[in-house]
Image (cartoon, rainbow, N blue to C red; front, side, top):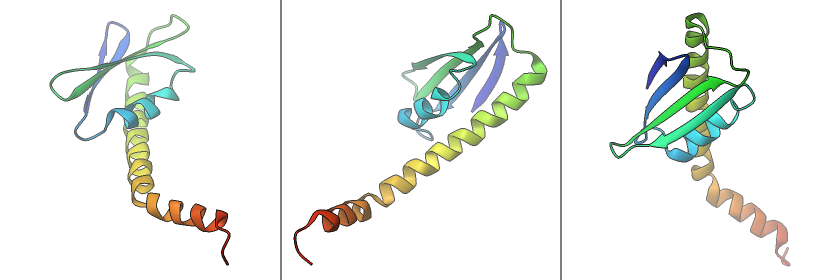
Length: 104
C-alpha cells in the first residue's frame, strides 16, 4: 500500500488482490466524519483513494504518518473480519436453522 501526501490530500494506492473492494469501502467509510473520501478502481488491480479534510484544512506531514498507520491497521482488521465471516458462514446458517426448526 502506498500512502502519499499530494496537494494537501492523502492518496492511497491499494492492491485489490490483497484487499477486496468491500474491505476497502468498509475501512474508509469510518473516515468520512473528518475526511472527504473518493475511491476509484483502476484496471491494474489497484484502488486509488483520495482523502482530504472536510473543514477545508490541509493535512500536515505530521498527521500523514498517523493516518496512514491507522488505515493500514483498519484494512487488516476488516480483511480479518471478512475472512472470519466467510469461514463461519456455514456454522451461522446451521445455528439459525436449528433455532427456527420445529424439531427437538
